[in-house]
Image 1 (cartoon, one colour):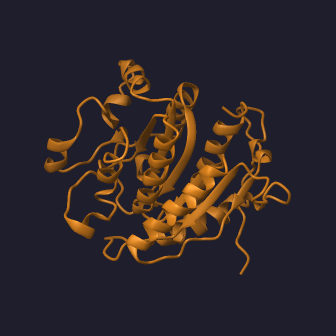
Image 2 (cartoon, one colour):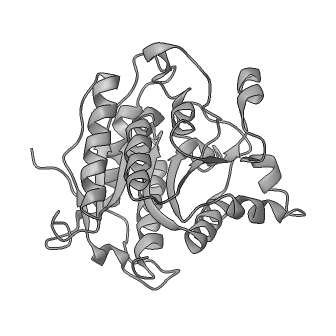
Image 3 (tube, rainbow, N blue to C red):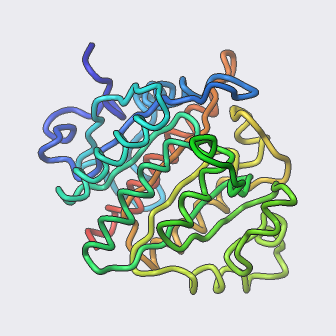
Length: 291
C-alpha cells in the first residue's frame, strides 16, 4: 500500500528528492501502557492533515512549498530495533540536509532521534540542545532494557546532549532528586502572567542548534484529551506556539519529534490539532528561509 503523504501534497513538493522536510511515522507502543492506542497516532495525524489548510494565516506563507515528504513507516515492534532504525533513518536525513519530523507512537520513539542528532552535530563540532515539551519529566531510571520506555525517555537525552524541559507538571520524588536545577520550567511558573523572566532564562540555556521533542500531553486536556496520561494545568495553543517562535528566533530548529496522540474514536479534534502542530513547526522552520 502506498504511503499516505502529509497534507496530500502533490508532486513535486512531496518527492523525497526535492522535499526539505521529511516525516517519519513510527507507530510504536510499548507492551504495558495503561491506555493503549498511541500506535494509531501517526496514521491519525496523517489522515487529519489531508483536511487542514497548509497556508499559514499568521505568517501569510505556504512553507509546505519547501517540500514535505512522508517516508515509509517504521513498524518495528521490538523496542531496541525500533530505536536503532529511527537513529539510522534520521542520520541519513541529516546527512542529506533534510529536516526530520518524527511522528510517534509513544515518546520512546524519540530516543533514536536523540542519538542521531547528538552524533551528527558532535561530528560537525557544533552544539546541540534538546528541548522537551511534556507534562511529565520522563527521567526515571531503570536498569538494562527496562529503561527503554516513555517513563525514562529523557534519561537517554541527558546522556547525549544538554536538555531543557518545558511545561512539566508531574514527576516522581526520584526524578525530583536527579533533575538538573535551572533547566526545568514548570507549567505553573511559565503560566504566571506576572513573571516573564523565565523566558529569558530558557532562551539563555539554548545553543546554536535545537532539537524539539513534544509529547502532546504538554497541552491542557481541555485542548488535547487524546493522550494516554493527561495532566491538568497544561499549556494552551498560543502559549506553546509563542515559546516555539521565540526558540526559533534564538536558535536553528534542526528537527522535531511529536508523540503521544492516542486517538479517540468519537472525537477527531485532537488529531487535527496535532496535524496543525506539525504544519506550524514546518512553517516556523521554513517561512523565513533556511538558517
